[in-house]
Length: 298
Image (spheres, rainbow, N blue to C red):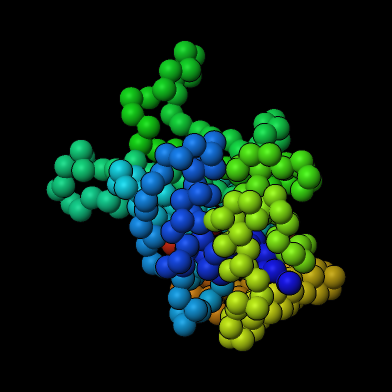
């Protein structure tokens, strides 16, 4: 058996965000949010994965959104590469999801809690050794939680998880191992197969269950990332900051269509280092507003 890595954006959504993924997502969220306790009983996945709607990197497959039975909203993101101001983006998406529940004039009591689950293939909190860290609003000196827990941030940092297959104990261990190591497996190992939802997730991740169109898209995305990095590396090796800016603007226009002169000038005036950071971040943007926010936060 050969498995596609859950770290790949559309593979992640096919596994956790398909119409057949409800029980998989329930098990995963109970592990990550509630330490494996069976708190979540049911949920509804918003905008389920649809292979016929493959459009562009990140647009269709980045986030999974689900509404729990208590009306709480969960947004989930898998982030492979570092990007500038990523911490701000996570907070922005959390607050935006919370605020967008209300139409103008609607009352605040209609707001439901929002939980942002962010999975990273890099470390975000060097001072925190655990792979999972959860954040809520608290008073600075007394550490007293804010009234209600409407906004929660949960981070899963994959590099911090070092357990081997034979060391897996909890549901949390098994799900993090699944995220981190699936691409290196050639069978469904017994410790993972003991959890029906993980076994089902592995069967979905089996390349044999991907259509030719999906596998071609998988390869296309990998090649695209390599090509774009190659363009920037070429410009860097040639030492031409101006040429590098032209390449980045080409990518911006391919991503969002022709942008106005103000944005073009701002990108062209970026330093060599910031241009490289923008390329790494570009395919994680969902809209032109994300690019503008990134530029504002420099």
